[in-house]
Image (tube, rainbow, N blue to C red):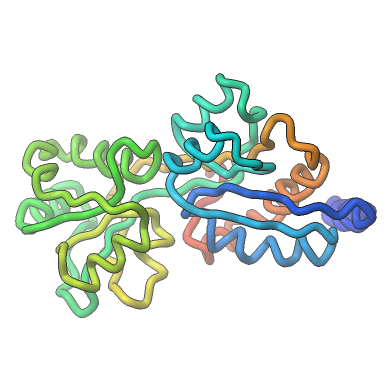
Amino acid sequence: MRFAFLVLLLISNRSEAAELRVLAIGATAPTLQRVIPEFERASGHRVVASFGPPGPMIEKIASGEVIDAIFISGPRYDDLVKSRAIDAGLVVARFGVGIGIPKGAAKPDVSTAEALKNTLLSAKALGGLGFDNGSVGTETLIGFHKLGIADQLVPKYRVYPNGMSVVQALVRHEIDFGFSVFADMAASKEIDYAGPYPPGIQTYVPIYATVRIGTPNEAAVKSLIELVRSKATAEFLKENWLLPASD
């Protein structure tokens, strides 16, 4: 009944069709790329979505770029709310750190903290996103600290701008292990997936969907966010390498 009401709401807004600019962290790409076409068909709105780490998203917002909706995680979300750049949002999903390896490489044991510790200590080179990116890169470093070997791992860690760059570094055998969100490491056919950070090391990070304060398309953005939330079942999110907003 609720979903039927949402569809009617979307259809009722067709006469006021707009172009919505969306910034979203890379972990949401598989999910939003499935939901957005449905939203566009039902509402008549056009959505232009850009995906990447939180850092560049913050820079775009600070530069005054026209943005309507934001899907973001971690402390950068808190910063944006405090600065009144965005409204307080709702959690639509969670993500965690996944570990990739070159295709065909022997699959390591990463199932426990001790096994992962030994695996990473034996690696010659690691790679992932920047530790200060407020998202998966930050969570990667937190994991190193939880393992108690950050001092040994950081010197052999190479920084890449996004998850796709980490994938390509693994393809080129520049690194032995790559770290990014589940979707980057598990869904790529160019590399193999070693697995997620193990229990006790993994932190599941909430993804917030929110409205850019001042957008003239607030009603349309809220309709998009509501459609995403209505689609975010455990099964749907699992297909897109995300976890539900809560257990």
